[in-house]
View 1 (cartoon, rainbow, N blue to C red):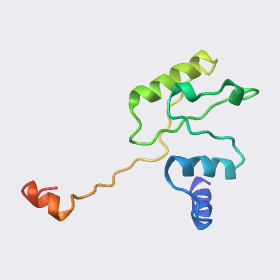
View 2 (view 1 turned 120 degrees about the vertical axis):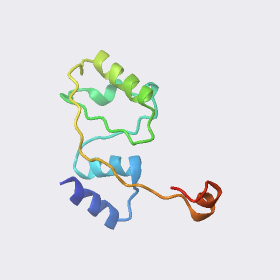
View 3 (view 1 turned 180 degrees about the vertical axis):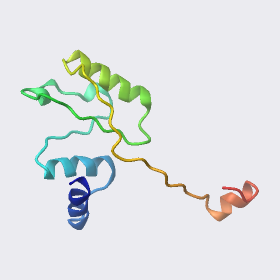
Length: 106
């Protein structure tokens, strides 16, 4: 289902990355919010909500993710289940100009 929603979002010219994740959630009928840090959590978002999902991009500092999880626990969402929905194994080579400066390695 996620792949289909992401494909539909892409066809509509929607954003990728975290903002795109919010759009995909909203297409699926699920409220979603970008949270740059714990101070941006709004308790009103959770009125009548039984479960909360949290997704973080690879560049998100682990300490920020933990702070958000701690705040969610304090709000009554204490049962945390970790789920891996995708494993990224893409390796990017350095641009030739940079690789040459480093002795040609990747």
